[in-house]
Image (cartoon, rainbow, N blue to C red):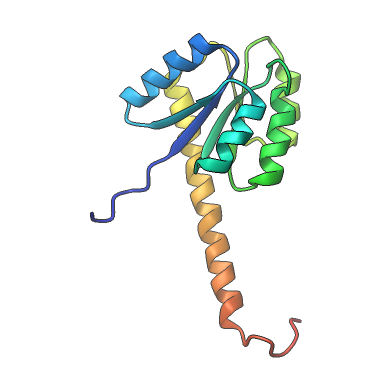
Length: 151
């Protein structure tokens, strides 16, 4: 294959199965690759096996809530972009999510085009940061290994 643009892989995390299946179907019809999880702990399990770029994470879930899941995702996978999803007028939780490393938040009911636009922005940010890290690492490797100490 030629230089096909890298595809964004999204994970939707929400305890509302109807929302998950409907949103996944719409996103897949628009050509996106989507994985779903019904809880924060299930999302963390799936992240071990799957390469995900952007997580859309509901704030209100039984068990591990969205902010707790966000903190754990960012601890384990700092380069994964997370967008918080809030439905119960819990903007405070979304703001806490932003302080804890989320890149953005959406309110339910979501506008699918807005979700895609925010996911695209998050994916672009992830790719930019990964490229910046790659360049920094290659510059570090180019310096004389074991040579003079860094100033």
